[in-house]
Length: 273
Image 1 (cartoon, rainbow, N blue to C red):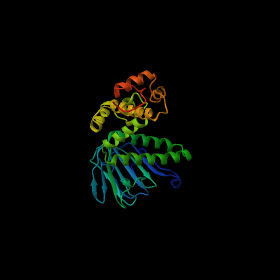
Image 2 (cartoon, one colour; image 1 turned 90 degrees about the horizontal axis):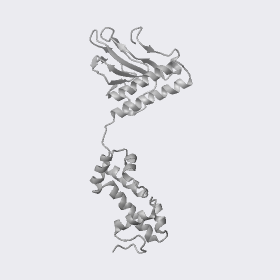
Image 3 (tube, rainbow, N blue to C red; image 1 turned 180 degrees about the horizontal axis):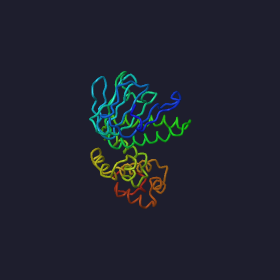
Image 4 (cartoon, helix red, strand yellow; image 1 turned 30 degrees about the vertical axis):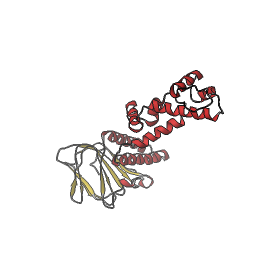
């Protein structure tokens, strides 16, 4: 435990709590080192500033801002630092293990993770939320703390995951299926950017790579192909087909069809000349 006076919280009736210990704020581990000890749960230690060393089995584990260490209950650890050097850190002691297998240290061991600044800020927000919840014990607080534990696990598991660029062929197929199922979409590029969550330039590059054409040209080809099939079926008039394909005025469809196929849509035969 940190020296008296340093910010921390422990429940008076630990048997009913998921969270068994919570701390935050500045520490001077060089002047007031924490001796090695085991704890009755899984410890999450997050370094905000400074570089204290965790000590496990007599071996120092170096840290820096953004370091997160998860200690197994059977792992005896402590903290040391250079005399006079300040560090800021947050600590949680949870009764239950991490919810993701990648975050579960082996018995008697620990896991050391490095997170970016964005994740660090989110962990600070989780710590503050925990501080608010423990101030008003009750069922809502207990549920909120379970959620906080889950939020931490999701953040840390995402940090450990190898970030790979999306498969462009898969994304191209999604775009093609979208256009096939939405032939009446007259602004395909705008809708595809929203659907795929990409910028217009990324969308253009994707279509040129996989289709050797622009999103508008591919969408137009699919729309006109659908129009040709509907005309061939003989079940719909040109006017009905125009409205079905998103045109406000049938004449716009007729002009577009003729420009694309070189003949009028009103001809019964769909055979190209």
